Amino acid sequence: MTIIQAIILGIVQGLTEYIPVSSSAHLIIVPWLFKWTDPALTSLSFDVALHMGTLVAVLVFFAKDWGRLIRAWFFSIKEHKIAGDPDRRLSWLIVLGCIPGGIAGVLGESKIDELFHQPNTPISTNAILVLAIILALLAVILFIVERTAQHTREMTSLTLKDAAIIGLAQALAIFPGVSRSGSTITAGLALGLKREDAARFSFLLGAPIIAGAGLKSLYDLLKAGQAGAGMASGELILFPIGIVVAAISGFFCIKYLLNYLQKHSTDAFVYYRWALAVLIVVVALLRA
Image (cartoon, rainbow, N blue to C red):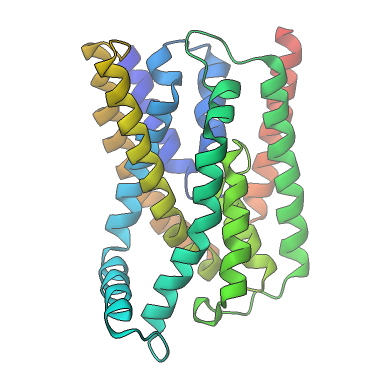
């Protein structure tokens, strides 16, 4: 049964990481709704492992882009030159945009862990209600941005200031319910980017942050194991299962979303966030 739950959570992660609905919130909400209490499934380590699966998805989907950007970045350092090469420029914009999120992760991860990922302890009603409020508030912001922004700029027009603003928005994603893609896509749209370009930059910007968080989680997990506080060997099988499932579902989600945003607005995700927030509040009150 736990393996089936891990597969379900892997699918949920893959389907929600790249659309602006918050995958971290869903990894909290789904076990809470169905009363899954296995500490392996509700741990921050498993959460990050699933994010590593969707990291694989974005690396594979944008493999040619990553190869080009990484090569351009190294050449920009070697030649001390950025101007005239859009790939070099974009690679440094991604580096700049990752700094706020990296700092937020280092400084705030433990606090978020205490609130949402305490092992063998059910998530509190207050934390769930906070999650619902965050889901609804970001939906309001996205709803407003959709109706006030121009949606005319392409990713190649991004400036250092734009990358910094989007990076600061990404830092807010440390709070479950904000959504990494939701905050960065919203910021990109507010700056006038086309929907597809805002999503594309969001995906590229999120990859280094997810990778850094995953490596730190792996280090913490190995450290806990050495101290005799790690998971049982039977529980460790959940990690590769979740990663593979999240990678496959995440790949197809990216492909679908980029095509979808070429012709549609983000309103469907706004209404979904509001509906989910209402569902959470109703269930929380009924269980109180």
